[in-house]
Amino acid sequence: MGSWKRKKKRNVGDLKKKGGCKTKRKKRSAEERTKTEKQGNKNRELRTLEMEAELTRQKEAAKREHEVELARLAAANGGGHTAERDDRAKAQKPLAFVYGKDDLFAYLQRFERFADTAKWHKTGWASKLSALLSG
Image 1 (cartoon, rainbow, N blue to C red):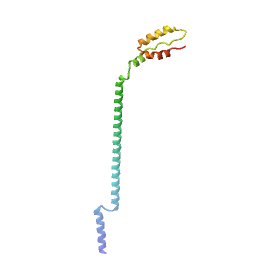
Image 2 (spheres, rainbow, N blue to C red):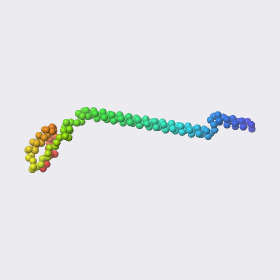
Image 3 (spheres, rainbow, N blue to C red):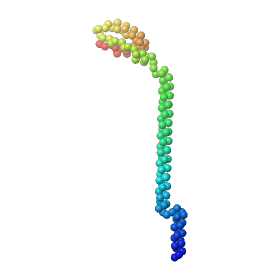
Image 4 (cartoon, rainbow, N blue to C red):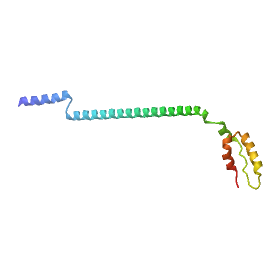
């Protein structure tokens, strides 16, 4: 029986040398799992931030491309503004023709003078005149 006690003592001593008893191993493995989970969470957060940064870069690149395209189109169209558009916004509008009160011949002469002064294209006179005539 004496040899059995020595073996038992030796086994307990071996456990202490190897890292202690089972409860210490459980605590250590739980701590390792916690560390692993924290590291995994950090890695996930890092990947999320990297994806968000990449998405932001892509949006900014698309916005810059859009602005360049708009600038190119504006340059091709002369800035998007024409003298006719600017004049149309600032110019006065001719008075409408009232049947029975105005003389048609005199009204047409006034309209032509007004259109020449406003530098309207003659191709657009008919549509503008038809909008002013009534009766």
